[in-house]
Structure formats: C-alpha cells, structure tokens
Length: 509
Image (cartoon, rainbow, N blue to C red; front, side, top):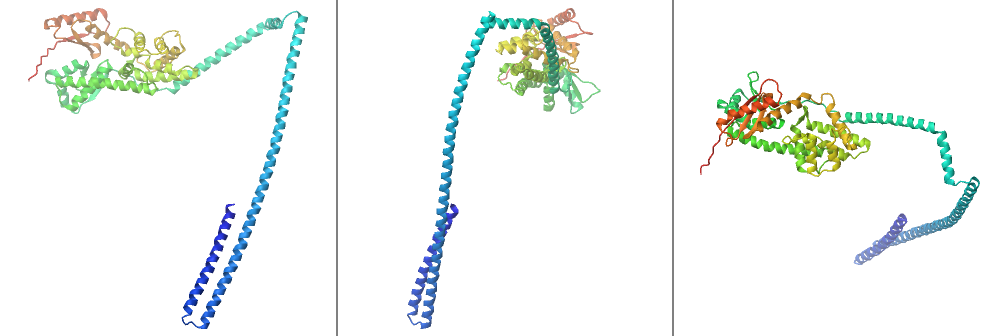
C-alpha cells in the first residue's frame, strides 16, 4: 500500500511540474514578444512562436501521460482494496464456522460428563447392593471380612514377611554404611589441607652484631626489662650472631614480644622506658588484630550476627594451639567438613556451621577455671546463642550426643584432630605444665606477674613492691619452689627467680 501511495504522489507532483512548465513557457513567450516589439525581425517572431507551440504541445502530452498513470494507479488501488475485502470476508466466515464447531463440541462434552456422572452413581449403588448381599450371605460385615482375610494372609506368609523384613534391614544397614563412608570420604577430600606443626620459638634477624649488644644493654638492663615486661625468654648465642630467638609457650606473648622487638630494632632507641611503651602499644594492636582475625573467620563461612565479645574470642584462635595444631586451621577444616556432612544429610547447616566455629571457644578462656567444654557452654549461654548451638558445642566430646548437629560436630572434630600429622600430642601437656608453674606462683599474695620460661626450667616472678618488701623476697622464692615440688611433676630442676623493682616518679612543673 505504501508503494501505491508513493506512485500516486509522484504522479501528482509530475502533473504539477508540467503545469508549471506550461506557465513558464507562456511567460517566456510574452517576454520575448515584448522584447521583439522593439524592432525584432519577422523570422525571430516566427521562431519564438514555433518554440512556444512546441512547449505547449509537450506540456499537453506530459499532462495526458500523467493523467493516464494516475488512473492506472487508482485502478490498482481499487483492485487491492477489493482483494483485501474478499480476504477479510473469507476469514470472518472461517471464524464463524469455528465458533459454531466449538459450541457443538462444548455441548457434546457436557452431555458426556453428565453420562459419566450417572454411570458412577449407578456403579456405586450396584457396589453397595453387592456388599449388602455378601454381608447377608456371609453373616459378617465388610470390615470383619477384611480382617479375616488379612489374618489368614499374615498367618500363611508370616515367615516369608519376617525373612523379607530382615533382608530389607540388612540391605538398608549395608547401604547406610556405604553412604556414610561416601559422605565422610567426600567431606575429608574436599577440605584436605597441608599441616605444619607450630612450636614455641620465634626467630628475629638482626641487622648487625652491634644490635645484639644494644638489646642486652648496660649490665643486661634492657634484656632483663624486656623479658620481665613481655614474659618471654630471649636467647642469643655465638653460633648465630645475627639472630635472636624468642622462647615462650604462650603464642600471644611470643607474638607481642616478636613485634615489639622488631619495632625497637627499627626505632634504634632501646631502653627500659621505651621497651615498656612499645610493648603496651603492641599489645593493644595485637588485640585489634585478633578481633579482625575473628571477623575474617566468621565472614569466611557467612556468619555475621555473632556478638562482638564472641568474635574477639574467636580471634584468639590465631595464636592458640591444640596439641600443636593451630586452632584457626583446625576450626576452618572442621567447619568445612561439618557443613559438607550436614548438607549431605539434610541437616540445618547453619547450626552445624556456628557450632563448629565455636566448639573450642573455651580453650581461649585461660584465666578461668573449668574444662573447655564447661567454659564454652557457659560463655555461649551468657550471650544467648541458640540452644541447638549450645547443645552441639557442649556435647561434642560426649559418647552419645543428644542431637544430630552434636554428632556431626563430634565427627568433624574427630576427623580433623585425629588425621595423621594433624597434632603433636606432647605439646598440650607441655603447655599445661607451663601454665601450672605460673599458676603456682600467682597463688601467693603480692605476686603481680609470673612467667614460665626456658621450657619450664625457670619461673620468673614479678612482685608488687608496695606489698612485698625486700626481706620477704627470699621467703617468697622458697615458698613457691616448695609448692612446685609438692604439687607438680617436671624433669630436672625449676629455678624460681623473684624480682622486686621499686619505681619512683615525679613531674616537673
């Protein structure tokens, strides 16, 4: 249709062009006649008249041609419209026929539905009559007859049913065992990691031999102040002139001492006052670092709603070890396995995930009495965690946990801790022995700090100068040594060193 309209428009424009040509031809003729009236020759007039006639004849021919084209286009339009009208009429006829067919089919469907309903009613009535006749003939009801048949069948097939039940139970047991093995193997394979055991010594490289002397200080005052403030033991020997070893069973103390000593070496100003300042600042930064580590651990598994106090305790995993196994690595490994097993069994993975993260939270509460199970359960109840999570944490070392989540946490913990190379069994006993030595010293009045150093061969005790006088220091050292002798078992000897340092300060105004 758009092509037809274009042809009509072009024809109209062509016709208009011819009329304009005719008009301008006449205009040219008039102008030439006007110019020739001023003295043109007869031949020029005739030539102009001839050209004018030729223009008029051409214009008429062009107008006739345009008219014919326009009539042809109009005829084509009429034919196209006529064909479109016929097509629409045919479509309308087909639609009417389809509508009538659909109406007929709907009526037939309704009739069939009514027939089916009538048949169903007739069948139910016939069935009820047959049942009634059978009950009259047999003298028992339908339910009684069903019970008789079932009793007979059960009696005849009793042994066969029992055998099949036993076979089904055996099959289910075998399949469940195989499925359990597959789940555990897949869980262990998906989280298998390399493990490097952690021990109790950190090393620091020194820039030169002179730095070792500056660390020791005049008459050993710097190294003595550093060891008293940090609770670690600095070891230097001639075999490694450019190296200092930091020894301590407590990883947090060892890390604080390591970072502090590195900063003192970089700063160059090593003196007791500066050592105390750097150590305090480092302790504060290590606390922030541990909190960040706790956040990273929870966010790794998509747990975002734990209390800040719990997150801070989780961050201590970074510097804590269980039988030589770093608690961050152990927790990550156990949580991955626990979530995998829970997903395979269709158990709520969130409860298992949080319980795995927090199952050893009691181990970082070193200043409180009780097992890590009791301490963990207590701290989780204190911050109102879900009872399902608390129960799973509290039961992860029981023989028979009361919940499925507790069983999964127990299995994941056992796999992570018991796999070859995961733990160094003597380390836990060593840490406990160091802690017992410190606790023995701290149990006496006036003791401010106590540090077990040199692998337990020495206990360094810092007393409060306002509570313990100089003449009481010897007696205190004797009492601590006798307490250790009576209550503890240790190889070799343990030296008890009691330090009383009196500081006086004032401010110039």
